[in-house]
Image (tube, rainbow, N blue to C red; front, side):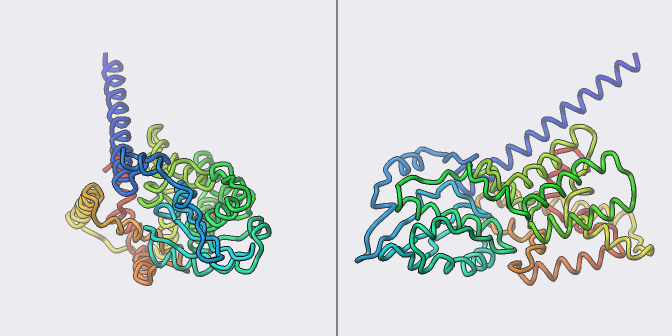
Length: 370
């Protein structure tokens, strides 16, 4: 009888966990629709569909004197940067690329500026044929934005040459780059090996890899911006590392591995954990203060979620402290805050994870964890 009761309670708890996970997914889908009017690459709403259906040739390509101008607003509408599409105009004169101009987008200005300034002249002076085949590396610290710029330029050049547009979903060039391959190996190590290896020295090595490879080199981590961008734009091979992270963060807890992502993969969590090893002396915090800070984290999360649902202050998503790893383009204030948190971690265990992190709060909410 007792066993039957325990089994019933277990099944109820699992059902509640599944329902909470589904609720969190629906919440984030609503944010994606609210911000980009898109879900998994499909436009939501009749007005957007009608607009897309009435695209004229002149909306894509036009003449400005002797110069051909290709606008990728519609050609590249499914190419996602960090926050959304990055339309461009590519100028071609006498079969040579003479300019690449950025159009309005919703990227974070300092991220986009770094990518654009680093790439805009890469194709200048080249023939259309040569430029369309040029392999260009993304700008470190602004990977998503720079990859989107590169794909938009290639789309424009391909359109001019043969009016056949490259499919973003079938572009496997990203998969062959050393950064992607090594990043994929590291995230798979972090997702699998800690399940079987309980060794402190291995854990330290893995944390260093998470920080160096996933955080600083690849600039990939679960954050509100990355989740909303994925839900809005849909699957692309470039997102594979991120998708593995999301699966670990939200699916592993269903099988008893709560906060696995935060503990074993998150680069900023790893940084705080390593800093905590620097000193055995810790600041003792009384129970009331800890509970008060935990309440602060939940209230902060609720306020920020309300902003997203109301369609205001989307910008906060770009300023979670994870972006400090993109130090070449991150805000100096964010880098300074990240350094302060890292130093504070020497004396207080993982303070950002425990008392601030909005993404961590969403993960904990989805797994019914306080």
